[in-house]
Structure formats: C-alpha cells, structure tokens
Length: 281
Image 1: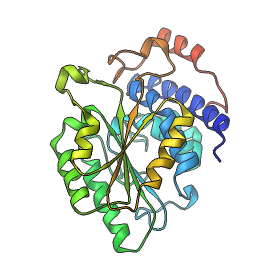
Image 2: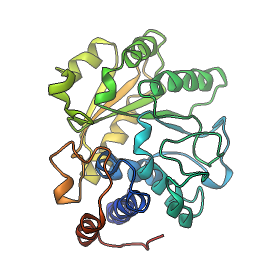
Image 3: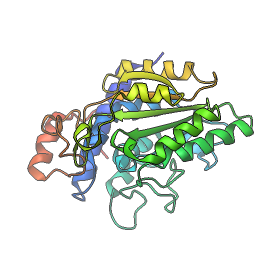
C-alpha cells in the first residue's frame, strides 16, 4: 500500500526544486511542472517497476516512461534525481550551457532516465507505441507510460498514433493527458478546443480512466485502475485534471506561468509557500 504522506512530502520538495531550478537561469516552464509534481512523484516512487542504479536505454524487463511534453523537464529532472538516477546536487545546473540538464530533455548528454529527446510536441505517443510493440515481441510484460499536455493534443501526430495503438491492440501502454486547460497562448478552449476529450479517446478505441492529478490518493488509485485495464486488447489513457502552477498562489489560475521564470521578488514569495521537506539541492 502506498505511503501517501511520504509521497506528499516528496512532491512538496519537488515543487520547491522546480521553482529554484527555473529561477537560477531565469528560464524554464514552472506552471505545468508544478501541476504535475504529484503525478511524477507517484509514478516514480510508487508505480513504475524500475532500477535507477542500472539504467539501460532499451528498458528491457522494466517499465518505461516517455515525457512527450518535454518542456516539463524541471519536474522530471527533480524526480529522477530524488529517485536516485543521478545526484540531487546536479539540479543546480538546470538550463546552464553544456550541462546534462537542458531545458528540453535530450539523449546526447547521456542523462540516466532519458531515452528520447522531447520538446517537439506530438511525437511521444508514436515513440511509446514502438517501445510497447518491442516489449510484446520480446515477451516483456512490463508497461510503457507517457505524459502529454492538453495543448499538445492539437498536434495531428498524436491522433495518428492513437489510431495505430488501438488498431494494433497495443494494450501494454498507459498514456496520461495533463488536462489543466491552459497552454502557452491562453486557455485551451480559446486556442483550439478539445471538446469532449473522453468521448474522443473512446471513439479512437482506447480505454479511459479519469483522475484528479493534484490529490495524491486519487493519483495512486488512478494508476492502479489504469494498470488493471492493461492486457485486455485496448490501450489505456488517463485524463488527469490538474491546476497549472499548483502550490504557488500567484501562478495558479493563469496560463502566464507556462514558460516564465519568477524574478527575485516572486521567487521569495513562492518559497514562503513551498516548504523544504527533505532537503534542498
């Protein structure tokens, strides 16, 4: 059984990490990263079957995760470090030239935990389908997980991959949509509305799970429910409601912190709201 309090403690530190990481280089994407801190914490500290100390690019005999909306790199790096993929102290190098922690994840730096470059939106589900099919061919019964932004669903390649996954019965994949309703240019409904998102995924042949991504208990239950539906002939998608900027009051309720780093005064305000729980880097 998941230790909810422990996971909440880690997620609180991860949110603090995110703000400190984007503040130092005055660059990054704090909004979505804050909103997905609970998701990443639950994924890496409770859900995935992985071995951080023995990372391999092929991911054989373990679960695999792909971050499709790569601008959420800060929260991913934080959780990877806190899980033990690399030293927590390396988080201080985020977005600094010639370091391994670039603004969008790449493979050139050989950072443990990263298997594909991401940031060009729309590509992650296609990659995940290939990885999931590979596991089937190799009789590897582990799962492939992905995360996507809601604005990313405006990319046509997502829906091509969604059709492919259902047609080929790729039932060892769990994809999650961060449905915060905001993207860089404004509310998703004002840019290109997604309409009835659940109905769309059902129509594309996927099994759908819904959860609140900012309540740890709901995230744990959501992952468990999604996992229980794998292996039954359909790919699984989680529609996850989150609040962009979660945990920092002046970042919540607006799209303006999608890709904006806080200045010194805003950083201080944010830090008063995000307690240090397991130690800063």
